[in-house]
Image (cartoon, rainbow, N blue to C red; front, side, top):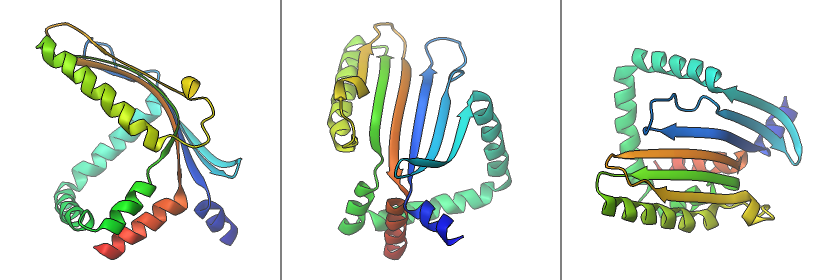
Length: 193
């Protein structure tokens, strides 16, 4: 039992999302090809894993919706409490720094993003803002274990000049986060509230 607890504490969660596909430009079903793999790894040993596909995620979504409907009143109280706690937490510098340390590290990022608005000028600016945002955030969250950035980090943001508000996002991403870091951050947040 103690071994399992220690193994869990010092493990990393590795998440692999393949074929995320979201769009409002056509009438097809979103995310039919999606697969999500979640692994618990200690060093290089994978000791627990789960694989979700579209059908499994739909079943999970239905269960979550049923649980939310049962607890609507409680959910409103929890949301109000979370908002209050967030205001307190974000005022403390040491907690902010710890939250930033708990950010997942990206190993692979492949994205194809296409956007359109009713105004072509706004579309052009939106593409620029999204591209700059991605390029400014990625260097801070890329794993140090990524050897070839050209192979692992690729994204394309392009405008669609149609007089309609729309988007299309195709994404594949791998990231890891340390369980001990999550627990440490959660404990620090709990102490500050």
